[in-house]
Amino acid sequence: MRESVRHNRIGVLVLGCALLAGCSGEQSSPSSTPTPTAAPSSSSTSTTQPVAGTQTVTVEVAPDLGDSPFDEPRQAVVPKGWTLSVWARTSRPRLMAWAPDGALLVSVPSTGQVLSFRPRGDGPPEESVLLDDLDEPHGLAFDGPTLYVAQSDQVDGYDYAGGAATNPRVVAGGLPDDRSPDLRGAYSHVLKSVAVGPDGAVYFSIGSTGNISADDRDATPPRATIMRVPPGGGPAEPFATGVRNGTGLAVAPDGAVWIANNGRDNIAFPDPEPSYGEVLPDYVDDNPPEQIARLTPGRELGWPYCNNVGAPADLPFVRDVQTNPDGELLDCAALPPVEQSMGAHSAPLGLSFTDGVLPEPYASGALVGVHGSWNRQPPRAPEVSFYPWRDGGLGDQQTLVGGFQADDGSRWGRPVAATTGPDGSVYITDDAADAIYRLTPPA
Image 1 (tube, rainbow, N blue to C red):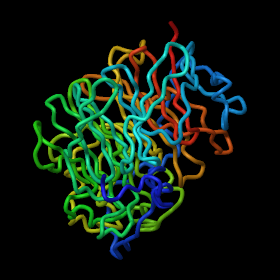
Image 2 (image 1 turned 135 degrees about the vertical axis):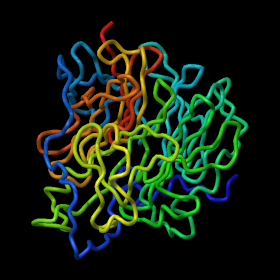
Image 3 (image 1 turned 45 degrees about the vertical axis):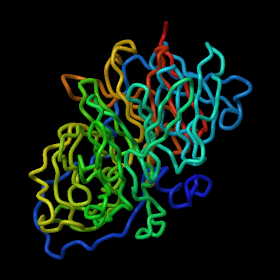
Image 4 (image 1 turned 180 degrees about the vertical axis):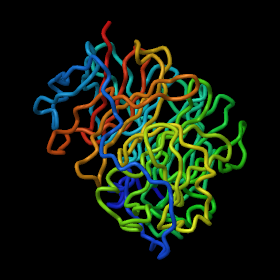
């Protein structure tokens, strides 16, 4: 038994910030000497484009699954001819992985569990607890019969067979979380994700402790990073840096590692005139865009010294006038553009790729669970986004499932992650509605 198991005592800070994927940290003062920089886009228009042929449907709910918010009809926007149903109900489901035996594994950080949902035809799945007494398990990934689970303080490997996970061993330990003595419980992005490359290398995220916490970059191990454990094991080393909160971590059809990253809050206006260094709500609402980036060894995504501008693809960087006023801490103009994006404060969480499972035009692409903003007016709406896969890159964002938010900004659900299943459907977790949905294309 591990000395400290605290899955039932997630603090207000973690639930309010890490699970909602946004939290403000301390602010640095801008330089008193403004210097010119590239002018970013401040458009309030989302880059999301609904795919032609959508329809509004009522979410199908079995009577025994009809607790709130499904005690009244709920409507969603889906592709024409598709259906959306509540497949299972469980408290605060987060990330998922399909096991080799056909079970859907779902992490529940708030209870310290990994659950197993075994499909049973068109009826409700058989639910069981696969792993218990873990420290905020989040990311799940398989490499053959090996299951990897990213807890808040370590990444573990298990032998998976016969519906059981056995022989646990630590793949990467001593990771920072809200029990780390030097952090004293102040950790906004404690949840970690994991993916396995085609060569067997294990990648996992370590989020930043706050909105602006530049000390993370020099910590041991460094925070705000994607770490890599080489095939066969060994010390974890930084693979990508400046990644504020990269909970969306997945491997693309060509074997490349991609990240969906939650960007900074409350950035200051960068132009010399007329409001240099001021935090303006109208500007903050749409800046900086959330990053959807292809990772390569040593990739730098800028946080907290550089911000992306423009939308939606090939986003350049400009210096952050609060944290990098003279551009001396990081040469932002020298950083390669970020491949894709979505609207600021969208809070992308789960990321997965699909290839050859869904019908066109969704046959190949990325699925992103968009949690929606916590600090924007009007709120950025939750949805499941689709990015088509094209020649090793991603096309522009499209809405696969929407309708979770009303015109007044109220919400009945907040998707976390989406992944295709062996039956050709898309399975979606929602930690606000305590639900797992099945999105099914026409036969």
